[in-house]
Image 1 (tube, rainbow, N blue to C red):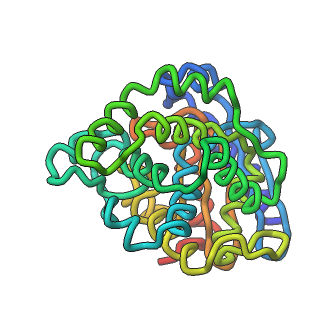
Image 2 (tube, one colour):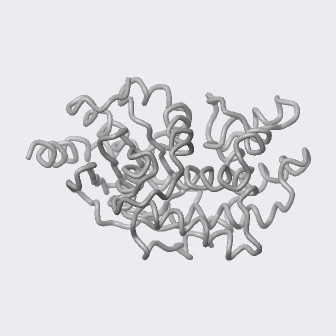
Length: 305
């Protein structure tokens, strides 16, 4: 079939590009990933599944989890309360930058897809204990992916917790302005949510869930329609770090990347796409995955614009 053939050809076309990228060296467990890996899975609204390359490998959500935690925070608190503490605007700075926090008074993060904003969002997720809060994140991820076996990768979690110096700096800076209360608990939740382990099929199903206005592959409405619309908008404007504008022009698909090399993409009313390629460009996106998705979008006219 055309889609299957195209995926296989695109993986082979862009696999050599992985040599120009590097794994996320600042997280030891991610640094050890195979930089040559590249895989993609597509799940369509009518139930077709297409896959190519190293799509059966497991990897962690990392920043892709920011989409799910934003959904939960909005469900728990409403738009007004959430966006009183975090903005809605793109940033041209790196995802882990502290610069804009220092320049803005008060130090309100620009959007929920950068690390500072995601920390604020995580602090707003309700739950009587840390275990309950991370379980709620897992429940949403599992429901969107229709996979009850999704879990936290404990090795990656410990690796992130032991080396997350920049995120600690961001969290304590936000504490100064009373934007975050319990810093250590928020950090622990953030490191755990980033360490949720998935495969390309999970990402594709999660992307399809958003493409179908919050309805998963089993027909269950797991995300409110209005919130699916909000997070897809953030995925377009902020989802690919400070390459979001370039990706919007070249691919035109709502997408969210993570420094494990994952990309979750959502083509409204059509399909969800999961990509894995741990060799990153200088902005933190999968170097081969970025180009593969842009090419796929051109071939199959996936752009929403």
